[in-house]
Length: 282
Length: 129
Image (cartoon, rainbow over all chains, first blue to last red; front, side, top):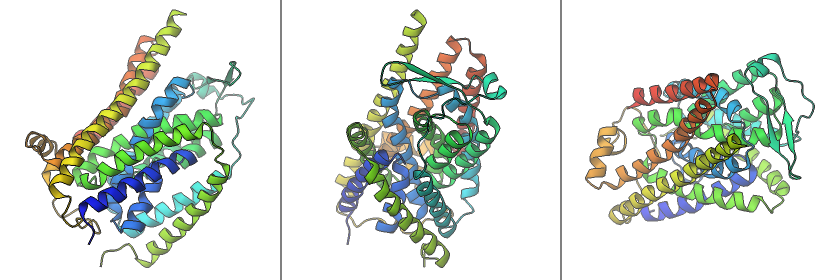
């Protein structure tokens, strides 16, 4: 028999690791919390999603405080795309009521596979991109400081496409409680040609706001369970803070590759169990 | 130059708000967590293996009134949920501060965009509670 105390302490330690890994790999704590809760503890997906939601906000605000100072985040771009993600999150939270554990597991597995695939991309600064007229009218250009003290300017395009993909990212956030970082990277890096560093920090900024849009609905539905939320929130936050500090002097390329394989294994497990009904309560 | 200083000041303020907000939220959740463990720590773990939308969930952590009542009555789970709500407020405050920043720069388009984002969150939250 596992007591409440034991469960809380184990979950606290696991959440710390999730926050640490999420921050080192740039995926966010929410993505790691879901398999920890569902596969390791056998917790229902709905409670796991509540935990992931809390983890996403803790990661976003916790590491955000460090990014703001560096002046890399493009607040205009983030705020403009937030319209799409918050509206998507509202839609996702509405749809979530109709989905059972199996469907959620398969969706989550697919997001993981996409995440692993996108981790293999080359990180590009997209130099010399000529911005589109719409992006110019919305003033979605920006600049970010370089290591040598100079400032680099950039322009953007593909506003419509980016906005549409962001809406989908919002829907997935609403359903899964995660930051959907992978879709945000597809939208900003792939379609809008935002420099890598800018898209990572801006995506982190957006994660917390998007999660907020569906959080109150989740509290009201009883999905955010205090017994789970408390250790997850504290653990993930301190894990993310440790990770942010380690990231400055650690080469994480090998870790990211190992993590990629782990993600694929978890994804395969999720999709298999989703199709065979392994997550349904008997 | 002056404007640049104001800009860094506000970024500093946003950064501090995020950091302090998260720490306050964590502290509240920690207090609630310690109370929860003192009261229920030696009980067997609750059954988290199944969730149903149809079964009613305790008001002490699902409704605004229930959470307020629980906080006043020192209910551990309500206190944890207060920590969660404090955590939710940090990104919302960040949007609010950005809106103030855009308003100060007379950037009406982006002040309006911030307002739209805030109203989507608030509308959905009011619908929730």
